[in-house]
View (tube, rainbow, N blue to C red):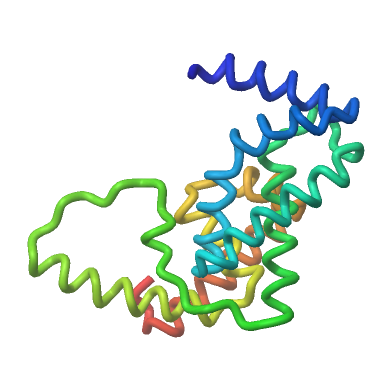
Amino acid sequence: MDEALKLSLERQAIDKCRAGDKEEFHVIVSMHSAALFRRAYGISGDRSLAEDAVQDVFVRAWKKFNTFKPEANLRNWLTGILVNRLIDLSRRKKLPSVDLSAASSKPSPARGPEESLVSSDDRRRLDAAIATLSAEHRVVVALRFYEQLSVPEIAAATGWREGTVKSRLSRAMATLRDTLGGAV
């Protein structure tokens, strides 16, 4: 399906949902659930928690759909709800250690056995270091490096100012450098 058609279907679904059509909300769920799950899993590292968080996002989105501005980006709005939900969950309990490579949407290049062994060890160290970050720092790292969103896109998705995103990203990178001995 081309991008223009997707956008048109999304706009129609948004209009119908804003008018109270619950049946049309399934179009929005089907269009965004996979990307939201990938982001939730990348941030949380827990498949079950990611599934629950995405389900919560759609429940909350439906309840607050009247607050969605039609000219806004729906993906960013849903991602903002997701990020807030994951931060809330992380305050209640420690998020588990995370293997962000599984959440990456980009395929990794083929490697030889020796290189795979080295990068596997490096990956474990990086995952362990990322797991020590605060929820806010983990969010910006996951969205920037694994979802490959720009700083303005992260700001739009989270509702944070660009300066806040830059600051959190900088602090997260400094923490990772300290943890990994400058290897970031």
